[in-house]
Amino acid sequence: MKNFDLKAWVRPNIWALKPYSSARDEFSGDEGVFLDANENPFGRKNRYPDPHQRALKKALSERNHIPVENIFIGNGSDEVIDLVYRIFCEPAKDRVIICPPTYGMYEVSANIHNVEVVRVPLTDSFEMNIDEILAHPAQCLFVCSPNNPSGNRLQNVERLLEEFQGIVIVDEAYIDFCAERSFTELLPQYPNLIVMQTFSKAWALASARVGIAYASAEIIALMDKTKPPYNVSRFNQEEALKALSKPEKHAYRVATILRERALLEKELQRLPVVKHIYPSDANFLLVEVTDADAIYHYLVSQKVIVRNRHSVVRNCIRITVGTAEENKILLQALRDYGNGNENL
Ligand code: PMP
Image (cartoon, rainbow, N blue to C red; front, side, top):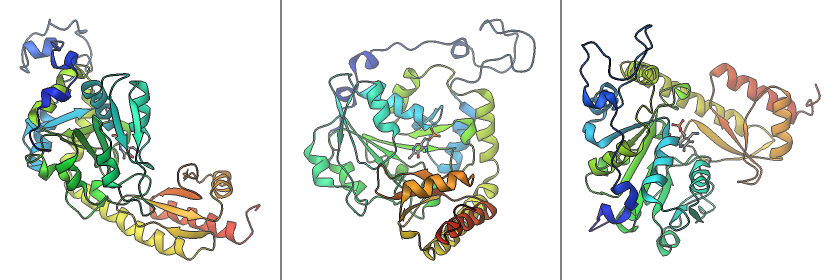
């Protein structure tokens, strides 16, 4: 977007917000007698975490060659989504665009904030309808790429970055499973771009709740002043740092998941219950089956839990790629179903 004036897109109360100043903002050294934050002097978990997540941002900055002032750390990327609404969307006034079928929190968060949602559905091949998106004025546009639940990386995002008049949030939760490059490379060109990533998927840290936003220093400063001061616990910051210190483990796990995804796809294709498998750039497969509701309930009865997406994509289930062992159990259950042994 050309001639972007950030202030014009930010809620006036947020622009004017004087943030909470925590005890750790006034003094941030490591050594001293700390009597400033009403903490308990006993124990080893007694201190508040770094509200600015400095060590984690530094490690991410070094890994991705992105300056620390362009990095925000959230309590999962769900917190980033929530902050986008808090910062940019005036309740009962502004609108956002989503492209279903897509990740459900964009719409839930809009409902929480009483922000209108304009749905511009993806095409049958799960691509964005760019002209229709551009025909709707809106404050924000959520682009999930690779998309959940379809699994594909979306085309023509750059055209939207050029032409959409508003904030574009590109959700790259699954980017590490995809051969193409991250949109973070385009941040210097697009001041209206926010790229979200997460430690929940390729970094195997869903329990820690650590999400990331990359954006202009001005947008990151708005996120930092709007978030709760201690939004990411010390333990979660440390877990993310530990994961970043072992890039080989991350690469090995991603490679294993991709290999398993290919195997799973090949085996699924042989099953009579499988009608179509959508191409995936993520750690899951969207699979059209003969009867998604029946197969979902049958799999649950076999203690194999997949995601039934029939309500959003007809007769589709979404299967996360598991370990080799888990995938074998799933495949065997589906073979038994196909063989009429479902009551075994
Ligand atoms: N974005 C997408 C596309 C997702 O699928 C998910 C989780 N399933 C999230 C964001 C949420 O990630 P986090 O765990 O970082 O909140």
